[in-house]
Amino acid sequence: QVQLVESGGGLVQPGGSLRLSCAASGSILITYNMAWYRQAPGKQRELVAVITGGGLTNYIDSVKGRFTISRDNAKMTVYLHTNSLKPEDTAVYYCNADIETLDYRRLEVWGQGTLVTVSS
Image (cartoon, rainbow, N blue to C red; front, side, top):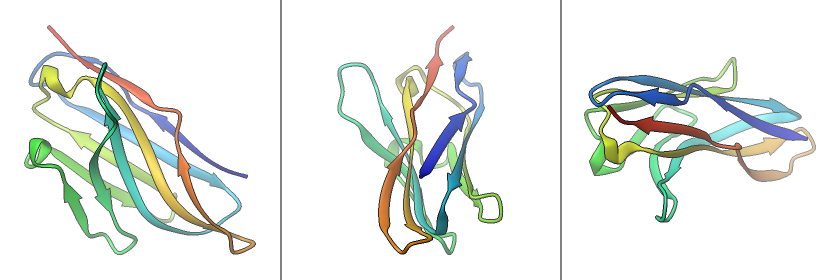
């Protein structure tokens, strides 16, 4: 069984920062792309940032220059460093990973989500 566990969400004032973490565990052979999505109240889930196994990154325009995605392959962990947070960044943030298991199955796995609230 493969699991993603997120942490690091919370309440922060506008202009503040948070670091979100997502650790993968279980019968994992390879972790390919890892990504962060978010879903604001009443809106569809959207891709925020993605990082390949080789470290290439991509971001949605609204977070470029403010958010940074990184990963530690040895720890099978992906991070989202969020800076200059705005009220419109308020959402549940979900971790997503493309994984190959020890018995060579390819899976897309989601975390349970962590709430980020940006408010004064």
